[in-house]
Image (cartoon, rainbow, N blue to C red; front, side):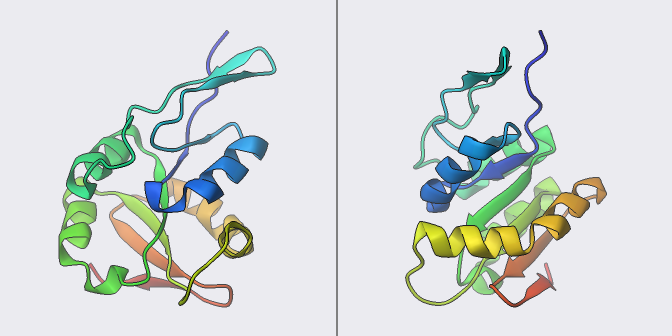
Length: 142
């Protein structure tokens, strides 16, 4: 039987969110995910095995796989190296940028608020980065 296709990669900055999404979706992975079987089909292990993997290493791997990235980065607009890695690898990224300490529930609320837009973006070509808060979704310039 074919494995479930992965469509979304949740970064190590948001592992709590990743665990919540993997519990309810079969198309999500995260660094260190060992895989599991759901409904007789396999969810494959993530090729990014270490949560400490540098952005310039994991972003191209995830982009090459065609996965959309979900991450937490309040300062994404000022992170030149990360924006360069996204642009160079033609990655597709959604970054939770809401200020302050966010609990898993807060990150889940923000992500689900914009889930239709995240799903719709799958057909778009990268590179792009969208910043997300509970009330806004805005593409940033690379």
